Image (tube, rainbow, N blue to C red; front, top):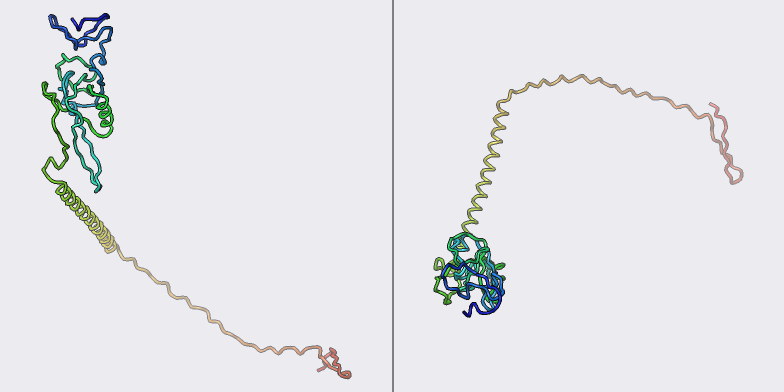
Length: 261
């Protein structure tokens, strides 16, 4: 009676069978529409998480189930190495809808792309931030198990039981082996290059040895004409003018006069 009290039309939020008791959780309030906001608890928010066939528990998550939200991320440590780990971000979160289906009576598993959960405002902020910081995945809880559990971060070292020092040593050994393999490969490539070069030179020598020799006939030297040098003495002609000097007092005067042999 209390659920049906109040004025205004009510709409069913879920399928109601014949002779089934009508519960307040299956119908809207007076005058409300049958939307997802009508099934939210007081002060809670609806946030969607992107999933796939693996992250969404292979489609076995249905509206009304409770799940834990896991965050997987990788950070770089002080030594420059990448470190991966998983944290339980939220526990016992109620699933409101899978894709666009909010009917809790659905029991046919199907792979979906998004799961909408009911969380508080702070948890909604965590989910939004975590979606960009790493990869979110869901862990389906027991139907009656809504109590939170004490959990801790799981790292790669927890998978094998090794300490961080053991992991660092193993990684250093792998790096050393990779460097040796690269150096050996580089040396093999150089040896192969030298062998191919020697093979090419040997092939060229074989081709040269098989070629027929070509006879070269040198031209006979040509006789060079002899040049005789003749020296002839030519008597120069005597000058036609003669220079005569006459002192007049202390002054010398010169005159050009015809020469007489």
